[in-house]
Image 1 (cartoon, rainbow, N blue to C red):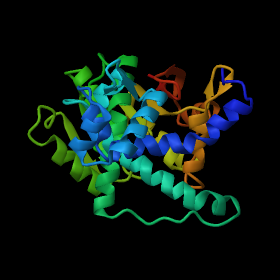
Image 2: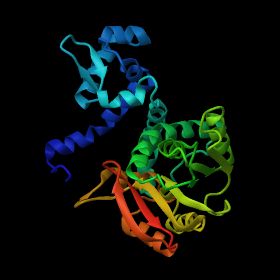
Image 3: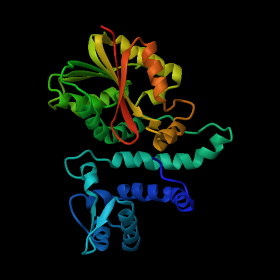
Image 4: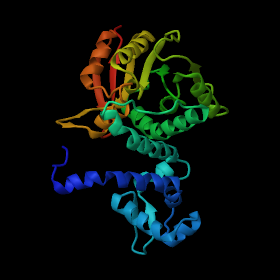
Length: 325
């Protein structure tokens, strides 16, 4: 259930802007990475990173209040244990997503009110460097979620996966690691497909994950797949194109094959999910966060059946539907 609204809760929400900026700046300046796996006082942390000790002292206090860091009896700070995999050695470096989120904050500040008043949301098309940064951000965010999805769905019987709009392959990688008998084809725009090939070159998964440059709605990959994945891509499109994407995925499946949809959810029991509702604004008129009723409709229109849902976090779910045998 959502927290009850009162004056104090309302004030906390108004201060959310500061919490966001503290977190992203702590990532951009290296503070979160420096605290992963070790404990440091403010002076030591500031000296290691070349930062100003006074501001770092207040930043650390704020990070501890937010639960991002914890403070020991000796006054030294460490990263919250739950966040260690995101910034510690050997984990998926989440800093790329913090950079992306930092930029989103700036864009929302410049655009939200003019957009509500009828203006276009301004922005520039990503160049090659921008596409690479976005791909790194989506991999940073997607890696942890992909592992949860792979653990939540039964993959043992699957042999061929098509991942439409699969980016640099973070979901395909998680699925293939969970099932050594699985082979995957990831479809995305040419620049992203190239980045995916480069990332897996020389790895044990290079021969098990192929990257295909193409359109995730209009294209065709030859069919014969027993598993199709649409992970965090339906929200990028308006309803008609989202439905077409589900139909494309269904057309690639063999009879009895399964479609998986991973995305933000708007519903969780009796309560609305704020992240899903806020993300819908982020997509403006280009796309949307779709309620479960819409996803059921997309699946039914594509001839799929046995629709079901499993939650993989507080604001994300994986939906399954099958092609009739």
